[in-house]
Image (cartoon, rainbow, N blue to C red; front, side, top):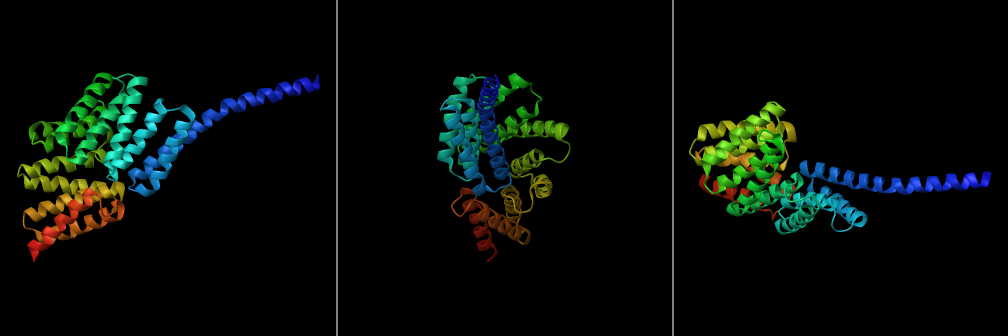
Amino acid sequence: MVCDVAIKIKRKNEIKMKMKEPVERLLEIRRLGDLGNQLRIAGRYKQAEPLLKRALALAEKMFGPKHHEIAFALNNLGMLYKYTGNFAEAERLYRRALRIDERVLGRDHVCVASLYHNLGGLEHARGHYARGEPFARRSVAIRRKALGANHPIVAEDMAALAPLLDGQGKYAEAERLYRRVLAIFKRVHGPEHYDIALNLNNLAAIYQRKGKLRQAERLYVRALAMKEKLLGARHPDVAMTLNNLGVLYKAQGRFDKAKPLIGRALKIFEKNLGPKHPKVAICRENYEQLTRQIN
């Protein structure tokens, strides 16, 4: 009897362990993905990559090739590659994730919208604005229907659509979107938030292209101060606004203000992105042009 009870207890514990192991593996996949995303957001791309690759490998081993967790891990790694300039690999991962999620979750699921959002952002990074617009509009349409027009996630989708319109010279619609997005984000997040800084920078770029240089300068300065406070002075996103403000000053002939800003942006980009990234090339060209103008 004692032996029989002991056997039953042992079997029960073994069943519990077998049930517990998948949960623990899933938590480890999510932990690796979350940590990798945190490092990406912090601009620590080299440290993020092995974690996100490991999360994908574990997910594939646990779930097989056609599960939402695979799509989730593919999307995380794709976002990293977009930021590091590995656009071809980012697209491959995004499209594989999209095929999985559309099959598993349905074409109108909010997770599918995230992938359309990211495909639009990737085309923006490549400078293919017209190609990216349908992806961004699809993400807005899916999530507006699911969540309502004033939801902050819908605002994120509109914020991704606006620069694609801006890049095609559709300034009026882009400006309307930025203003609406900023109103939603301020209502939800208060006056200081990364999304607010990002969209202030982008709205400033429209003002700059329209020749409204004072308004552009004011918004760039606000965006820069907010980004430095939230992200730290050496973050690549800070460098983006440094470069933009420097280019504005260069166009105004205020070379004494432009050179230190663009020079600082170039150092940040080179350290975080490496010498071959498109943002490094653009910033270096801005700096060299400015140097020639001064000399």
